[in-house]
Length: 386
Image 1 (cartoon, rainbow, N blue to C red):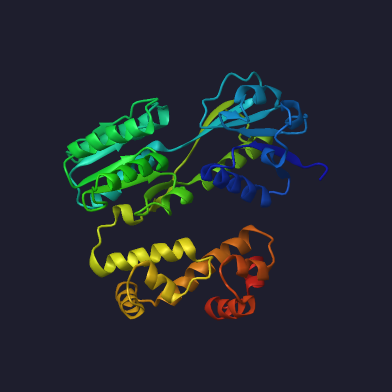
Image 2 (tube, rainbow, N blue to C red):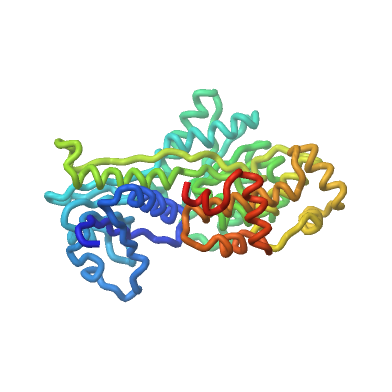
C-alpha cells in the first residue's frame, strides 16, 4: 500500500528462533497500520543485494550473514534504521543502529533454578567447540549462580574440527568422570542432543544419572529425542516485538534524543520441561511418555489404543494411571492438545476453519466445531475474530 513504511526482514527461517522473532515483528505490524513487513525469504534465491534493497525499505532487520552476504553490506544500502540480530552493531554513519540479543543472565538463571529444584549437587556445562560471546556469558552466569549456593561447575568444551566419532569418544570419557547424579546444561539444543545420544550409547541413564537441558526449545530436536529434551525457551517473539517497537520509535523520532546506537534484549518465555529432566518413576513415567506421544502425534489419526501401544501398556491400565496422575482421561488430553493447535492456527493464519480442523487431527470438522463450542462457549469463527 502506498504510504506505508516498510521493514525488510532478512532472517533465516530454517531456525525456530528466527521464525518466532519474525512472528513478533508481524504481530507488531498487524497492530500498527503505518507499517508493513517484507520477508526476504519470499524472494527467489538468485535475487541480488540491490534487488532486496531497492531504496523502498525504511528499516532493515538482519542476522550475521544473510545468503552469504555480510550484514554490513546489506546495512550500507539501507537508508536509515538497521537492527542486527546476535551481531554487534558496526559504525554506520548517520544511520540509527541497534543490536538485539537474548538476556544470557536470565537464561542461565532459568537453567540454574530448574536444576536446584531437582535437589542436585553436581552440575556441568557443555560449551560449543568454538566459544562465542553468548555461550561464554551463559557459562559465566551459570557458574556465578551456582557459586552463590556453594556449588562448583564442571565445564566441557569439545575439540573443534573433531570427527563425530572422536567427539563422541571425548564426551563418553568426560561423562564417565562426572559425579552422579548430575545436571548437565548444554549451550544449545543440538549440543544437548549430542550429549543425550552419547548417554544412550554408553548406557548412562537419563534422567536418573544425568539430567540434560538445552536452550532454544527447537521442537524438531526436543520432541524427537529419546527421552525428549528439556530446554530453556528464550522469548524470541518478544524480541521480534521489541525490534519493531524500536524501529517505530526511531522512525517517529521518539524519544527525541535517542542514541544512534542501542542494545536491545529479550528475556525467557520459560523452561519447557520434558523427560530428560523429569525425576519420575513407575506409573508417572508411563503417563509422561503417553503425554509426549500425544503431543508429537496429535495431528495424526491417533486414538487411545494407539497411545497405549506406544507406551506398552494395556488400555485399561493406561486409562487408570492417566486419570490418577493427571485427573483427566487420555481422550480428553488428546482433544486438549488438538484444540490448542486449532486455537493457534485460528489466531495466526487465514486458513479455513474446516482445513484447520483437518490439519489438527480431526477427521470430522463438523464434530470438532461442535465440541469446540461446548468447551469454550463460542464458535471457532468467533474465537478467531475475538
